[in-house]
Image 1: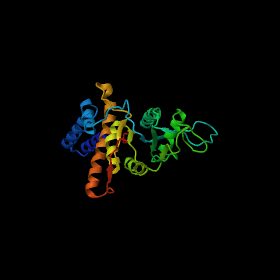
Image 2: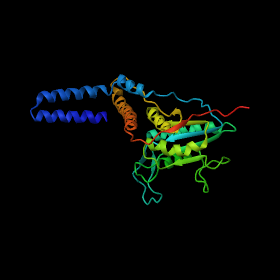
Image 3: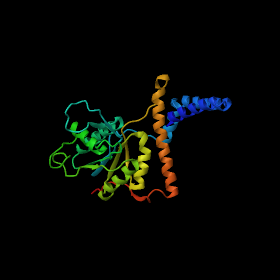
Image 4: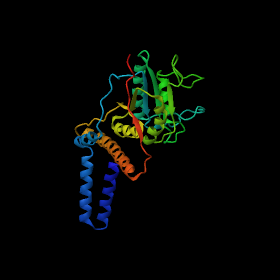
Length: 280
């Protein structure tokens, strides 16, 4: 988004110069250079992420008796087929952020199941907006099978030995974060969970939690990764890319607020806050 603005304003400045409107062209080019310089600065990224209120890493989760771990997909990658006579279909994997989220979900899920008497449900949420032919939820499930977190079986598809059926749930219809919250909420609300952890990137967490609350689900943030500003010219492009992602999230939050005011969002559902089980 930010880089596109810089390129567009630079091209506009060139066009104005060709049309002999040099003064306006110089002003436009100056603004473009200022924006281009600013987006890679550490203070600019820190300002944007400050608005997003990045959450800390969950080192030791506080599990309840009945727990849900929601993992949001982040896109998939369809690899070029370099294998002749391949019959198993295209190779589709998580993208970078999706991989990190899946691994963090595996850590949390393994920790939950290691504690005796806990019910732990893993909800993988993500459709196929990239049109690779495989949903993000399915790709995450395959990754969890590959690393041994869950075990694929012929009769149950994806489950673990000696665990209740349905402990691994795939939500494969959503195409964006708002739908992640909407469709996952339909699976979550009837279940009366004590703890609901939400796994996504820290930069994405504020918007995701906002949407889940809209659909009646209060979540505990469990960020999988965090953007860190890098000083010096070597960090310029990294900072610019992360600033662009942060601005996208801020724009999404503002759009949500505006749509609420205009009545374009469905009515919010009353939030049932998470509760501890009664103690004897």
